[in-house]
Image (tube, rainbow, N blue to C red; front, side, top):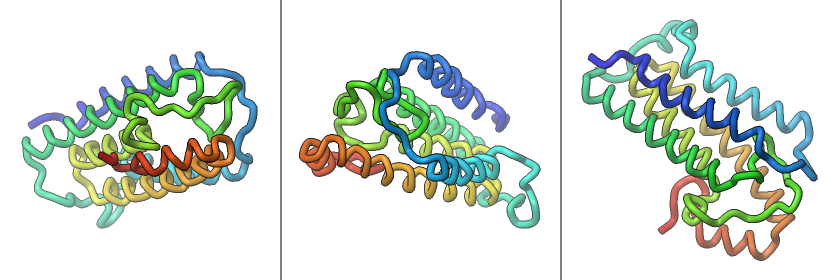
Length: 187
């Protein structure tokens, strides 16, 4: 049986890429308010804690949600890698305009290349997919709850981003919204 620790490798690759990429961003012109930022961050921390922290195996949260097999572990690991790959691909296309918080950068542009051609929030989509994959590998009810909390946090953050981008890019962003999906691709 595949060790559930193998799902950590893609998350470590994601963290390494994010740290290196964070050093190559443009100066911030405008950012979200402190409370808005840390409110969503708190939601995300709760979700990822439930997903990854075995100490959260309390009561029913510590029970298996499906019969873990080699096939479900491999599927979970594949989904984790695919999700992390999508997030890294999207981060690459954002380049110097990326930020961990909702911001506008100097000379900010509306990115429509790579995964942004079909999705408005591919980083969140990728991380949601990776979280689902990790939940399959770990196989605990706390992971299911954690994935739901993570998704709620990303939806809140994505809606706030869209409000900022609509204000900045107006008609161009509205057109982008019509041509792309929110968290699922539009073809």
